Image 1 (spheres, rainbow, N blue to C red):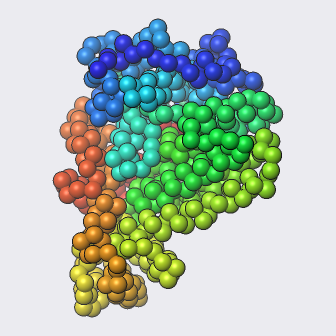
Image 2 (cartoon, rainbow, N blue to C red):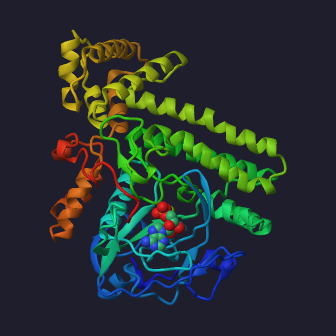
Image 3 (tube, helix red, strand yellow):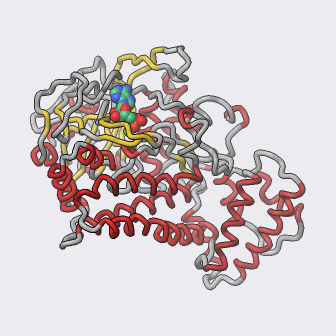
Length: 519
Ligand code: AMP
Ligand code: MG
């Protein structure tokens, strides 16, 4: 096991592509290049707040044992094998072309190769200004860093594809933020997350050279991406085959978000991973009450473009942007469109499998699809707590006597008492469900096993994060430490102390239900 300071980093991206090597961090357009070199800005005092032992084991590195190692996690020290850079990318934000964006506060230190041959990109988020910081400070606050650290790890344990987080440090410096965008800016503690992924490439990295008509650069980036991250793809039609796989991975990711009730909140094309990972944790949330219209992002109002129930459609829209970007180097554009259109079939097939698992069915047949649709409709009317409702569903008795019995069974999940009409709907739904369970071709035992494996019992709710952040800011890590453990066992009863719906005080409270992008 190595110390972080003794890693011999690879720098394949920097070595493979043109970059602006000047180190100049004056905000500017950087045509023709894939990155601009950027050294992390030295901060005052780096203190380790959290370290992910399991990820470190996978990376074959030791928990920091001295201040030099900790300083690396805060960008205060850079080792000789690192060639830090900020990537240049563009994006569509809230449906509009936003031009060049780039890593404004993320700096990649280098790539780490483990003994198994796996390569990981190590990146600091909040490490200071880069050529892409525009008029912002390149920093991140503790509040948002703690959220990214915990949630990206939580998603990993939920088995949802995601970037990871190795460490969280405080910088000993204060960062000015106007959290509510209401003119009341205040200082908050600064922090840095070291995040880790095979690659942080986004759709926007491909949109950038395309928008600049840098066709050779675009082709080079695609070839590199395929060779490195999609090595099983080759032959004459490799670009189409690659795009189709990006379509499939993205569709799968949307289904996984639905499964666990995750709402990303800022699905701009610069926040869409080319590997189909959940990336860039900002004003995200789990749905508490089941509401397809729920968006956690205050900037997403009133349009609710990124609402829970719209994520699958938006992902396809984003894929269309990617298709548009790569179109100049795809010979047969009809095939490219067909590949984009394959999204729907693939999505629905994955969705049906996912719903079968959530509901404990052998499969979702053509006939069952109507039932599933009805199921989601009833849920979106009654709006029970999603996580708790599905847990209670696992224990639903085979025979449901009457409406009262249904009400009592699901009581714990209700935020509001359902009306008589709603109760009737739920009762009918559960009767159909029980009958359908009877005709399962899998055993009841297998059915329950599938439900337990696919319905999380613990999800990292925003109000819990909010409480943990308030405590940590006051110097009390107790809840944060507990949450770090709880995220590792989302499907077990072990952390049932958190098995409760969102408390009423948190319903409208900023940071507990809705968040701003200010981070
Ligand atoms: P996001 O909405 O967080 O994905 O960010 C969109 C763009 O704004 C990206 O180019 C970020 O790097 C940049 N950005 C966000 N916050 C900051 C910050 N505090 N300093 C510099 N750039 C930032
Ligand atoms: Mg982003």
